[in-house]
Image 1 (cartoon, rainbow, N blue to C red):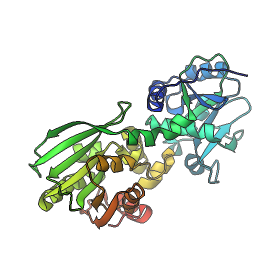
Image 2: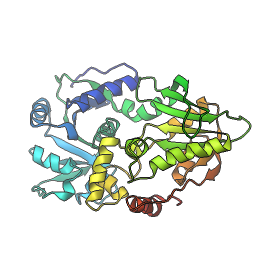
Image 3: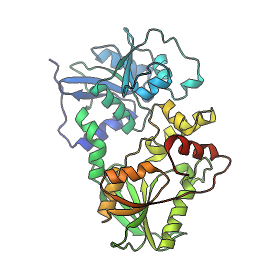
Image 4: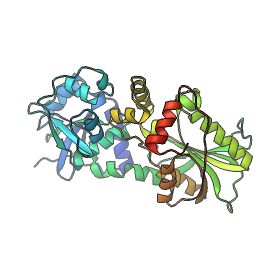
Length: 362
């Protein structure tokens, strides 16, 4: 029976370490009980790393992708959460690149007739989750691990628990007064998880009254809209508009969440923009990438509010999912406050899609 070293570290640190390995193109070992696979992030695979993985493995190299990605490629029309794509001799890099490439819909496909599709088990599904946590495309190269492979280990249990543990471990690490153009009496509070991961921010306007439900907005960071003034979305308008409304009300909290692109990250959002320019709408572009239409997790927001002493809120949003998510995490939403801005020629279709496909109330 193969034996391998199992890390006894904090699950957050365990996952954070293998994320660094995957992002630089190295392999890691993912284990569930006595079973384990060697994994490469499909996005970061090279011909050399693929050959090395094949030489260290006890099975042919296969690709794990989301069921969403397999569906849009026409490979599998079931409702599997994730699928394993394989061939008897192992996959070649050209096939991997095509299957994992977010722009493959615009390319001529290679010969796919020998592909075998099967439902992914828990171990393989965790590899896709790990690719998502790495802010890479949601696809993984896997092969059964050999006994002598020197690679960092991570457990499926640590991967599954990572998001919840990271959110529960958020703590205030810094706070400062920051006068804003639309709200001179404002301060910014920074929250960081225990593993030293990405910080979330709270912009607090005015003095909160604990007897009154706080006026709040959950705002996912948007580099292009918030900072650059992109016309492809309405994020910049929503950011500045909500702060202005909070100032008029007398107080409020804007939670600035590190969840770019509805949770897929900036690089993948730019890929989605390429697909949108090719004719896909904002939801279908995410599906082409292999993501769900919205990958965000609102447990960090609920934890931040609790740390600020807030459990009852008036939520500025057009997204009913945010109302439901806060309620699920024991934050009472006493009122939904509409938050609508005029469209322009660049984001009209984007806003229409959010209303028709994502249920936004515009």
